[in-house]
Length: 397
Image 1 (cartoon, rainbow, N blue to C red):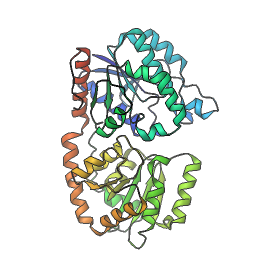
Image 2 (tube, rainbow, N blue to C red):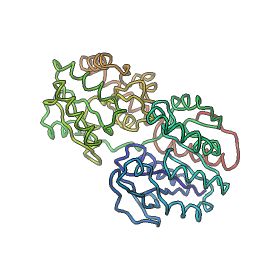
Image 3 (tube, helix red, strand yellow):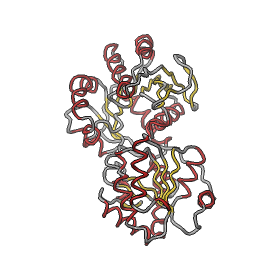
Image 4 (cartoon, rainbow, N blue to C red):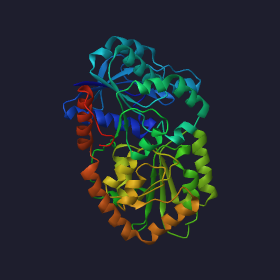
């Protein structure tokens, strides 16, 4: 079975979705799916330094990169126009039995769906939260027009829609697409355990051994709810804790966050470490005591899974799709997106750190049982097979 995955970008600066797609394709190959990725050389404001127009091994995954049009106008640049990708798709898409589209409202995904429809190649679409209410409310008129004029026909032409959470499935059901769909979470690779991560983290930042470390690790973006989290932490300065803020954003937004930290009295107990990866990221994730993500909307949040997988409890708000899993299985805290509610949950954690450690142990077990890449890739392979064989599928897997 030969499957082409299309995504506008797989650059690390684009967040967890890019890595999740790379991981998915890598895991699918183990299930004997001949999966490849076609994408652009987008790297945020820059371009990846990669060969173009030929298949290469990128992070051990077969990838075709095509040049992204890069004018000075950000909105055009973000659309990821790629003329050479269009030519390549016209010539090569028929070599694939199935196409898997990731993300929407971008040139690569829109054009691929249109070409697949024209050439009668079946395709599946994973919106990655871009059809959820919060996302559609951003640039509302532009997205609604795009959806009505272009993307709705492309979505209705798909064989199936893939949602990564029941929350996403419920929100998209309000759009009236009436397409077969299913829910299958993104999987993760269980990380190698760093036995002395806690000690190494505290040595690196000169943090007392018994002081709790609260970690935020995600893109710095207005959807992440830092305007609630930082004031909530500011209400707790009578407690001992260190806050680590990992991730990057636009210079303007980073300046706003810096200002918030200062105005709420947190600057002297906060380490702003920027974008992290590799072992540095692993030490942060495994050496911290609580992971926090207070997003307005978060379709899946791989970083939450990664924390739970290493036994670190989490604090997430209801807009994070995994919030129901956290709440049902008592893996952490799920306050409303409200400064007072978040502060109360944080205080509960700081007053009961041993209970939180027990939550972390429960989390480690649950993730290893249900959310590994091996399990989710095998389920996706079965879904691909059933689409090609035109079999009925349930709406949840």
